[in-house]
Length: 117
Image (cartoon, rainbow, N blue to C red):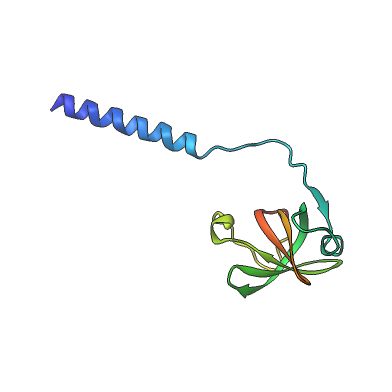
């Protein structure tokens, strides 16, 4: 019985260490340039930038209307990228990701989102 308890305790400790290691990632400077919506609309496809403003409306299918003082843009935020964050139109956010241009449609694919206000 003591051997079984010891084995169980060691397994639990190993799982705990593994879980801590899996939660990590890079934490250094983000070299993506902060731009306005107006600037983002004229940038080339796949340009990596950050936007600062407000998510004002859910459009469905993981798409949202994003607004700053220069205009509006559709942003796509995958469900897992919210990471438990709750945002309302009165909260200012910063989103980092890339410009997605297809034909004449311009959207922004969000990689990360954080509340700044």
